[in-house]
Image (cartoon, rainbow, N blue to C red):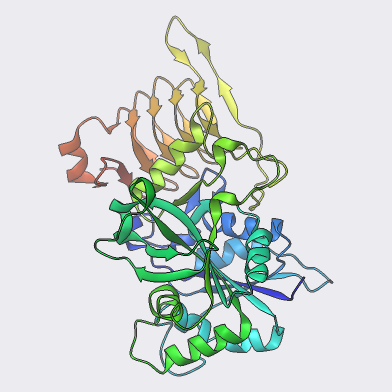
Length: 406
């Protein structure tokens, strides 16, 4: 195996996830009750045996740094680490001007580690991936740069870097977020997942040249999109990636949760009876901070009086109490409480949310430590919801962290 350094780009501002990113970076946004979004990228890398990881941060990084220090402190005498790297202005007075510039400003980290290969991964996607298989493809093809790829409908081209490839996977054209791409078989195109493997020398040369040019300094748009004409750039088909105990139903599952509706939809994927992405694969675990909390609790069984503590098709985390309320197709994070005669449907409740008696909550995301007063109704009157809260294009009502009801 070559020497590999992983660099995780976790500086994203996450404007499209507002208000969940009001006071936290996008990779630090909670997901699936007990995780943060970044935990999925880090779990894929560590499960794959990539144990030298630099996490590059920038915007509103306090909660992210706190999470990483508590959940990802490897403390290994073998030299394994997950290091947090804040923006340091090492090359001047500028913060990171883009993802390529973030790498350029931290070339000292690469020089110190002296890797043969650098894996550059995003921090804000939900998926499982054995990165070793991508690395093997990169080495077998003698590639300079390898791009992890998935097929997407041509109508989504403007959201992705889009590639055309030869039979062996070599990229013969790359365009970042084209307005109208040429469709391939089935009306689909080959899209970049935002994960890359670079030969170290190639990476250093490319980001150094980019730093001296007038570009947006983005690793995809300004480095990879220009390198394919003079470098051996290959697309790795993520659909061929297999992790232990993965079902065929899960193969190729990857979600960019960069919008509120995508974030909400990825949660709904988890609570279905047969989820297309399962959190219960013990052979490829998603790791995170372990809360020291008691088990979830369900109390009251007065079916005649309709005071029943009940949850169906839902994820209920440790420390949560369903006290005479009903929960359906929802995610309850640690220390959530749902009180008597209330109902929660198709919703995501983050840590410490308290739902008062006789409340009705539907298709909502309620951020941390919100106390919902008794009798509150959310998700049933779009006009009233829009006057009080942020409502996504898909009609998801978002109650911001610490919101105080009047």
